[in-house]
Image (tube, rainbow, N blue to C red):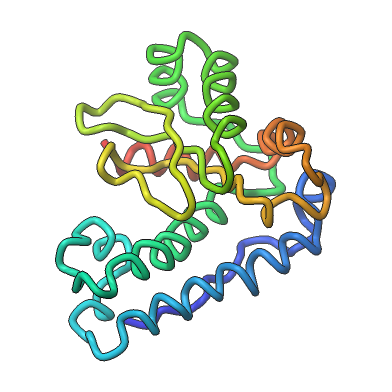
Length: 201
């Protein structure tokens, strides 16, 4: 299969003022493209792995030769994580499905309580990383975070993610990560998150 930078479903300036145009352009064309390029380079000559989607390679990381495994975790993670991230962003107003809303209320008590728990996961992730909403192996919702470009497949199926690397927000927010996290809710594509939830079940 071809490993190419996915197109965004919106223009770079479409998420302003919450995520600025320059950040989106650099984040997509430089950072995400860089991870994809380095992922392909790490697996050079290993056509059986390059023929598989990055998600499945990461889920079966033990099949990657040990000498290139960390490079695949780092760059394959950056490849996969950003792909999910772009899909759950939108400038449009969206609404989560009744099924997802019910699951959030049952797990966290309310949407506001979910947002509070997610905020803590994102804000307290030391250094670079990601905050996640997963469907765990029992079919329940779970909030967690990972360092660097690590993926959370050991805990469940990601349906929602927030990039808290500084490159995701620093041009606009500088060191104000909490402001970035709070503004993120204005550009969430709940239609896509609801779709991801259904698939994960």
